[in-house]
Every structure is written in C-alpha cells, then in structure tokens.
Length: 75
Length: 208
Image (cartoon, rainbow over all chains, first blue to last red; front, side, top):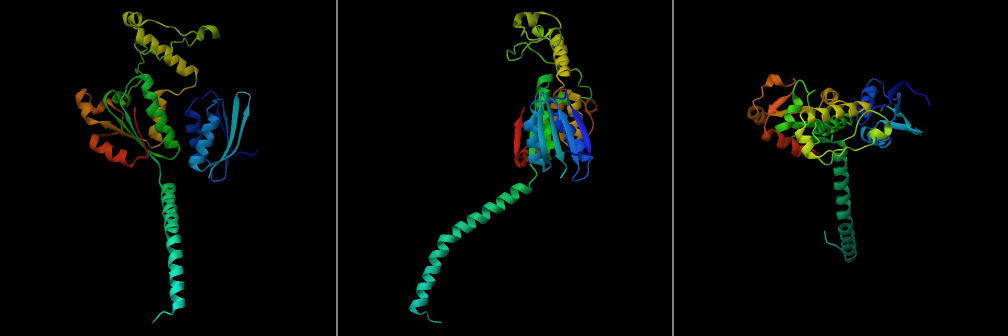
C-alpha cells in the first residue's frame, strides 16, 4: 500500500505509539498516508479507537507474528 | 365561517392524527439536536493527581497525554503528594514495595527463568534493610526502560506539548513549604473553586 511517511514505533509501549502517531500525522497534509510499525499488542485496539475518535481513517491494520502495521490517512 | 358536518369530521380526524404523530416528531427532533450537540462538543477530561510515587505518576500523565492526542481538552490538578510531579527534577521519584503486596518483585536482568521469579520479600526485611526502597526503585526504572515504557519526564513533556493544562494546588504548596521556583513553568496556581467548575464541564473526571 502506498504511504507518504513511515513511523517506527517498534519496542515502544502504550501510550507512546499513539502519541508519536499524532505528532507524525500533524506533519502530513490532508489525505496523505502514514505507515506505522509497532510491537505493542495493545496497539491493535488502540489504533482503531484513535481513528474513530479523531476522524483519521485507519485504511489497514495487519498483524505479522509479533509485529503490527497500520496505515492511517490524515483527515 | 361555519363548519359543515363533513369538515368537522375532517378536523377531528386531523387532530387525532396530529396528536399521535406530534410527540413522536418532537422526540425525534430533540434526539437529533442532542446528538448533533454531543458530536460537536470537544470531550473534556479533568484529573486530580494526588500521589507522588513513581508508579502513581503514570496514570495522570498517560491518560492526560493520550486524551490530548485524541483531541480532548485536558486539565490536571496536582494536589498533596501529586505536587511532587511538577517539580523541575522528577528523576528522584520512588516506588515502594513495602506494604504493597500487589507489586511483583522481579529482576530486570539475567536469564528468562531468573526474571520470571517473583521475589516474595517479607515486609520486615524490606523495612529493615537500609536503601531497600532505592534498590526497588532502580529495579523498576530498569524494567521500565527494558519494556519500552516512557519515562515520567517524557510523558510530562508530551502532555505539556499537547496542550494539557497543569494547575497546582496553592494550599498544598504553602502546606508543604514549596516555592513556585521549585516547579516547572507554564502552570497555574489555584484552589478547589477553580477545579470544580472545570470538573463540572468535563465528560470524564478522575481522582488519582
């Protein structure tokens, strides 16, 4: 999937992945996509809730073994 | 104008129908207006932070910074031991396993089987060994670093950056003999009368 920026949040624990994502999204233009890598198992639910609450679109949420990736589009 | 018997019947029918429909329509309208207002409102979180140990420092800053990231308005009121979280240097926050049977005592180093052991150290020993609290704090700090959990200073910085409003309880500042110079900048000093109206407007209020 196409993305405009990548955020490596692997090894970080709650709430850092969300806080870093918020910052990274602020640097994108509306419609641009952020690719996030994480290892926090709680991030799957947290990113869905973050998207619902902020109105940014969670385009995809994938789990590979112990790693998670998210594609989030800035609203 | 006089009504013919026929129009009277029509009026009655219309009236009866309106009486059935109007309450439903009004209820629907009110519900929609309430929902629109709810959606337009920025959620607000008000927290009282009353504890000053390393473990209890986490909830206010984690919830505060995360709520701010979700776009909420956040206010944290620091009172009693919570005031310590506003000091310029918070690297000396401590955690005590003494009298806290809920706290696991695990070693943050060595082989996996060793790290898995929960050291059940009697209170009497914890209380009698000089520096036990400092040792427990060091172990906790190492665990925090190992697990990729943010430091309190970092979470506090992120909260401020995200626009979380910090207020210190002036009464406690006086009570404990602190000076404003002891604390970081950018915080307000106020009392209960300032917190209550903020809490009243907030959707979520927590006492930590």
